[in-house]
Length: 343
Image (tube, rainbow, N blue to C red; front, top):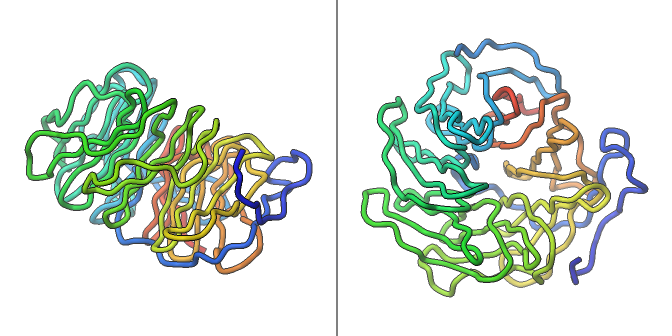
């Protein structure tokens, strides 16, 4: 699948992750996570299984996006993908849930600069859009309409960026202060966006398709999008970025699911972990890299300062998917938003 050398101890056979955890390969890109948020009824606290202290903060319906801002967890409930989705918030300590807007068509990605929540809709089929709503709720404003493939959205505090899927991967942007959206980056071919991450002036997009790769571009639009490695048929589910390294989950069934580390600059990528079963979203907190495992119902953590394999951070969750980290680890599942105490 990839031409670079694999530096790891692979899992034997295809045993369940719980019985035989994945193995960790060589890694030397240790650096702190960039500053910023994560992504993406009453919050009665209760234990919900797991190995980390697990507290249920709020109900959800197929959570897809999660973002942390000013002591609140903002999240999208995709629901069935029809006009039954919601954009909601709850305190990081739990309490009353505020539905900022309801009856949305498949809300997905979310980011919250200042007092406005931006979210995307209908990213997996047909046309969708980019919209905004106040952090206390109210009327929804359309930022961009007829957007297909808006699975990723980020902000640098000045501008808003999102992905499109149209004969390849496109990136559009608009100033947070207002104005007309415009396209700034693209890469053509059988390649489709799966998310979007920002670090400084760098944008990174995990993709799928027969010409998939993690692709990179500048927020200035200079140079267009380019792959970090050889393009091939595969699916990258998510990306997390430190000052030296780009981490990506390669979404495949065990023993082929992987986490790959790409150097920011010169050097070859290495396979950091293998033997995974459909690894999905990533969150980086200093030297700890967390990833969700919806199939197994787990959240895993890798201590990047060691050569030991990943360990289960929380288990028994109902399809955990979006994840963000700050004072604790926050995860969206098929039915709830949970807070996981750091060990």
